[in-house]
Image (cartoon, rainbow, N blue to C red; front, side):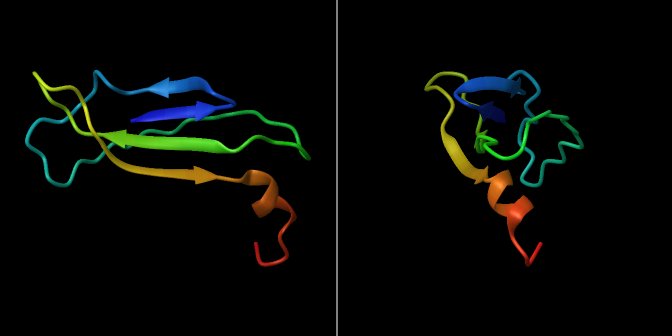
Length: 74
């Protein structure tokens, strides 16, 4: 798993993979300090682990904190 903010890697868990685990549990917490308004989006990308062929993206999401902070529904 890799977390990016403004194109810079904030967290890289590439070495903490779980071999042959269909339901991995990461149990991690990251604190990222940003200013409002104008907070950049946070990208989270999950990879699988391959010894020979390179890691493949298996999931990704992004968080727009400005949108959530100023939204009436949140």
